[in-house]
Image (cartoon, rainbow over the protein chains, first blue to last red):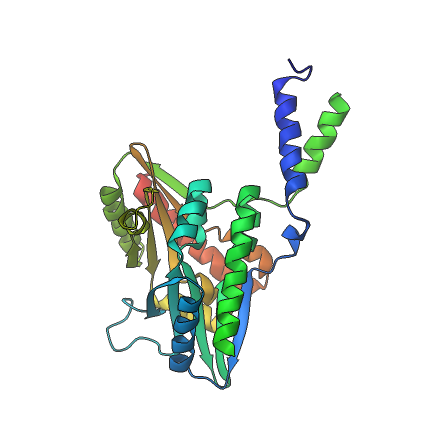
Length: 156
Length: 146
């Protein structure tokens, strides 16, 4: 039998979880960014879809950012979203914490500029850090690295 | 001992705030909840862009049913405003609502936009995010019957 009251044991446990949070947790940027210089949005989308497949993710769909919000044919051509996922990983993180639905499925936003295409994705480690569930960290770190590798491969 | 406990409480209290998304819950099954959220979004001038059936996609592949669907909602002016004010915000559009089955209830939860205000504190950006937060709060209030 512990000599400490239950409320204090809960407090000790919480403090232990806090200490177990990786030191890098507070240094994460909210967005992951890669720029595809000299490409248009069609070329960038094609390269990205190819890279997604190469990294064991399933392409889900792509759409203009205002798809279904404006009449068909009048959608913005310069901003597109590509959705993809790894079902195994998705099942694992949802089993750990349903709040991970906040960054599922994976999505990358493409923004065409005069010099190329900017790729942006919300950093899953940044999101999971805010959730305060240390068990998510390993998975979210993997998804973050996958995002970066996919975007960098598309930019090669 | 009390002093030690107080010190731990202070340490825990001093850590960054954790996620605080907007949520609402109602006793209804998932398909009915989807209809109710869709109607609530339309009442606020939003359209459902896509219902992402994460539950069906996983079950079809042999995984356990997480009881979750995602609704993406938007309106064309939202995209125009983000483009004009701060294109980084395009990465959170269309706005997302998670519907999670909890027994006989369905919980609806928005993305946590509060943290974006901390990361992008420019006044115009914050005002835009607050507009979205206000809209989401009205939609979830409408859904829950408040």
